Length: 151
Image (cartoon, rainbow, N blue to C red; front, side, top):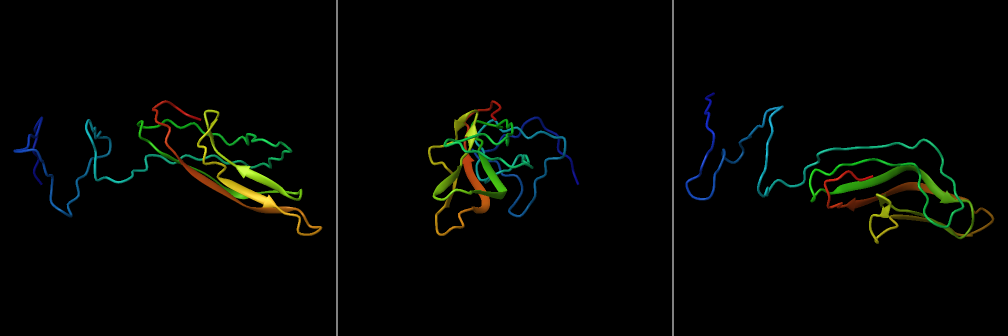
């Protein structure tokens, strides 16, 4: 293996190619790769995965959204960062006939999108048995357009 030490590589023309198809270019651990221009052809990159767990029952008779205690602080890497917000596990439902339970997402106190709610379950009075609970999962893709921490 050879080592080439330079301060700058300037292409002849407007394109610089590193390696050939099938080659691997490695940025060593501890090194920093800084992009001051446009990065294209990389696809999506997952920079971080964060999670929080709720181990309690949330019960309400409210007719509007309530907070559940599920909260997480996220700092976007760039103004074009996107977050896949998910909630899953457990169950949701109502023990009253002809009722709906809705799930939506809030960021910094505002509903993420007018597309919500992201999950709805309904109980319908089919017979004397009216308690209906079902699996619980909802998700949405959020683009905060900021580099400031959001909750």
